[in-house]
Length: 257
Image 1 (cartoon, rainbow, N blue to C red):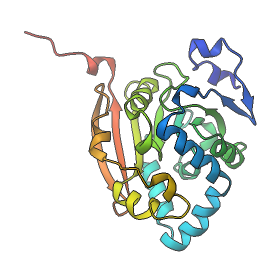
Image 2: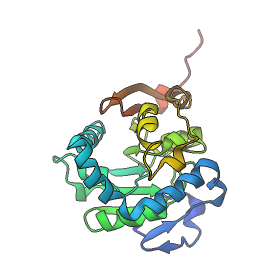
Image 3: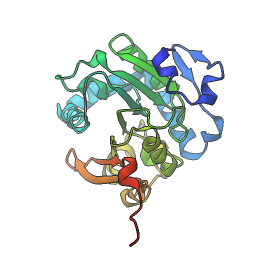
């Protein structure tokens, strides 16, 4: 494991010998493999080998270049700089990393990606292992193995709609972000879930009993953030939620007269 990544791991994680499989750090706690976490981990493991091909071929035929434009739009909302540390929660195969702004030297970034699906992480490593300074972790979003205030950019694209504990995952993303960091969370809208995932022969058995309420997700936004903004994108097929971790000064309670 890279020295600089070891330095931002929690103390208790640094004290153990982390299992490594196919270049991926294995830190998945079985207690999080419950309910939707387990179901969708199984789905993405099953889909992982053909996931990128399906999006490239079927996505291009059905939606033209609009998926790429949507990914580019999402990445443009983050505050990229050279020589910073980036955390991508639920990195999947990493396709969004293709849309880091061209003005950024992508190889100067220290990118950390995590996912509950080992299959998706293996594909991500094949895609970007030699292109970026990339460290991958198989773990749950509800229990990040990193110290507080570690990352300059924190974002999540795809998955949180059906996390077993959305509140814990969002709190963890805020915890590991540096004060002042803008955090981005994006996933599909309920309309898209109903019209696409519940009808596709590849995914419908996983989604048939699922329901998503965006307002319920909003209720889990942690209190120690500001500048909250919710946007619908890609013709209302997905949403983009952003907020900023408050600095210690901003987080101070008002002084009573």
